[in-house]
Image (cartoon, rainbow, N blue to C red; front, side, top):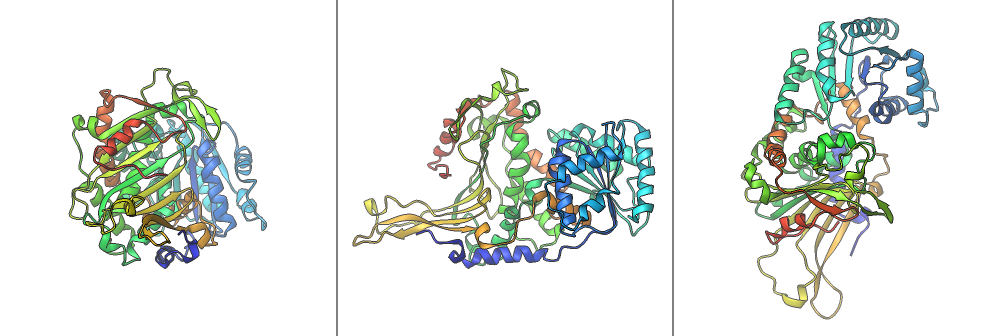
Length: 518
């Protein structure tokens, strides 16, 4: 009994309609200059420049707009324009809108440690203001390596580029993750940034928050009266959050050695999804209300002791195996990875939220690379009925009811519940109703970077991460980090192409539960 998305539950469609209405009118930004630090790097070419091009082609940029690139590469304006062209040449531009913007792009080559670099940047920005009528409005995007975030912020401050010139102009700073490598470094980074920029000027970007399906968690919850009464400890047995990837570390081996699954996924992406799924209803859909509730939820997450992690956390590393019929190497054989590496590519852990709504409900988290399937999903597993009149063999195929929110790649919602099998006997089994965003809506989903860059340009902070949220997320993972540093729990191994180590199965089975079949 699987129904088509068009006939699933109208409630999901209502949820999506509400979500789109919250920002139904896409405001066009005021005139501005986007300054990209690290403009010749991989992130700029793969994500930022294509996203800006798409916004331009859809006429969502102001006419008075320009990009100034900044990096250490010794090229000139024309060299930068060639880089921009190569990054965006496959994007349809029938009216030549992007081509017209491209003519006015500028570039600064220099060392971020040198004040001369920023003096020249200030001069170029003044020239662009005059030529393009950008009115002194600035959005600075830090697409550099993290250790340069503070350096660039300070450099902008030294030449006065960190402050708006008048009350009618703005200056904003977009910061890519990671926001530190632990609690202390995150605090230190914030202190450095706040020496040059106020909190309302800083937009910390996590691309997960730009995904339509992450945002629609709010719509599903708060647009539908049928879910609110059961969205709590009285009906929910436990919650599972899964972020599974089939890819390995690819060419990022050296970076991943300094990160691992805990820092790369759990501290940011998972905490964002967790807070949106479990937070209390905000008073309004304004940025302040949503961000306040997310922080309240994270502050309610119980922070365990270091010694407890042996029993509540599993860390593991992928070995060689097979993905989609292709043999793949183990993590320690990847380029840039130590042959004796102890870096985790998989982590499973259990958390609790100590508040009225979720007290006593375990939250199981698992994330890993080189797993059997790519999927990001949140599953609410409901309690079983207190009494079944058709027990035994009549209900042996009946499982607990589950509401699953699929964030990627097959975005949608599924509801698993019990139904009678056709026939003379009263046998029941678990069936599913599935709702697919792609089938229900013809609109092309906007790329996460397009949404977030547009929001930064118009000054909407709702989907960006506030400083107290960053700090609280690091506090939650701090005991896990500390236990890993002490070599506990022991590093397990799992073959590539599986769903992780046997130790993760034992973690959830210890409470009589099991991971959802993906």
